Length: 341
Ligand code: TRP
Ligand code: SF4
Image 1: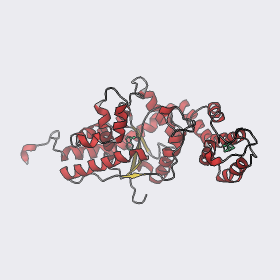
Image 2: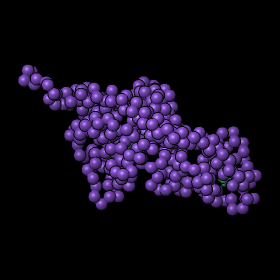
Image 3: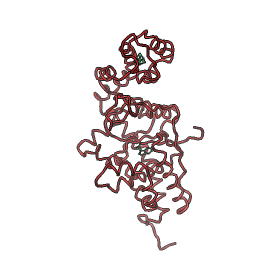
Image 4: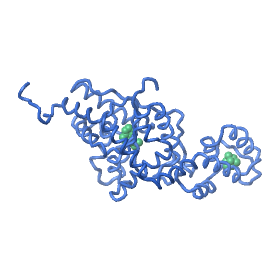
């Protein structure tokens, strides 16, 4: 974490933010924002969303982009403090992306695991899916960010970003730093409410941070527990139980150690009671987020103002970097006099 001067991360504007995103990423961004203020940049990557056929609908994209901003602000990313902006509001992202596209070997892109996985699922693969990590590199290098908080699935894209920076520097002269990935070892991989796979929108096993409390309770109530507890009097093993895991994310450690674990093992509490306690702990954290979201929905102009402030701060960094790139790659600048040298 030392030496970290500017961080950048990207957020897809796809659907509702769930507790997996919240615990795994957003909480860390909030912490980084507290340390770095406006040098912590968070961008809602709407141009990336265009490559995702499940998420992309031109009629819904503006709403989803706005809602992603609102949810992140409600969760605690304060746009007065950090730089929160929409990728397409700073057109230099796509401009730099094209420059990198001309300098990146196809082979590097075909190797990307995420490309291979996503391409398999589509009949016709858009070229944008292949170029996705090039745009991601542009998101990062446009700000000369040194640190990129990401999940493990993005490490390969980060390595490619570093390679793109190195290659550019070699060809056109020292320009970009090589950004480092920041993996959060404390970030849990939150299992879905089905107890089977990692929580993910596409699997439909999520709990949204802005979901109605009654709906959250319904999901907890019907969630699987330790299969050994068939009857209320059967003792259980909490570490085998999804509900216990969620307790470790949301309940005070004393409650988990001193109540949930021993009482489960000696059948002192029933699973419904245990779930009730979890629900209370979760709503203690999500309640204030939901209140802020309701407040922002009543005053949507606050979200717009935050995004406009973010756009201005981002553009103030991006525009001179892009001009530096245009000059270095040898574009004739307007009004320049190439015959003179
Ligand atoms: N590809 C990232 C993801 O799916 C999102 C992203 C786009 C990103 N641009 C970025 C992440 C820049 C970090 C930095 O999660
Ligand atoms: Fe899981 Fe709690 Fe039931 Fe134990 S008491 S099995 S931890 S829900």
